[in-house]
Image 1 (tube, rainbow, N blue to C red):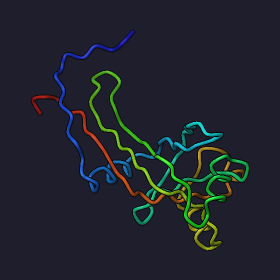
Image 2: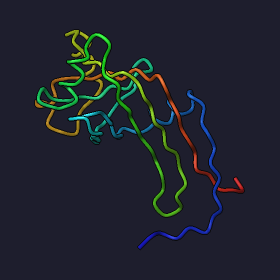
Image 3: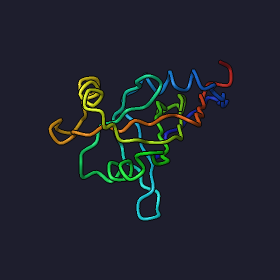
Amino acid sequence: MIPRHDTAQRRIDLDRTEALRLLGSVSLGRVVFTRQALPTVRPVNHVLDGGDIVIRTHEAAALTSHARRGEDGGVVVAYEADAIDPETHLGWSVVVTGYARLVTDPAELARLRELLQPWAPPDDMDQAVRIRPDLVTGVRLAREDG
């Protein structure tokens, strides 16, 4: 059954600063990348670090191998996070497009491992990928009267 909502809504475009602030207020999102020439989506947890999105992965993850292959320039990915109420359909959504690079510096990797605890067993999640936001878009879905 589709939830019913009686409130008229309006869409408000967010600027880059507000969009990244909202993205940083949640810990779960979805990373989108290409695998075998098709779009692939993976739910992951994240943290913002110096304006970049950081996620932890494991050695065998498809995103890890893609990021490794594109190490010099990175590989293009999209990242989406949101907080939308399923009853009222109010909330926000942010989409970031940028280059993902595998973190290779041991000191930085150790720091990021402390900063971001993955939802999978941490022993398996020994890699980190840093996404530098190039294109940031976001919308807030608000009540028409507010």
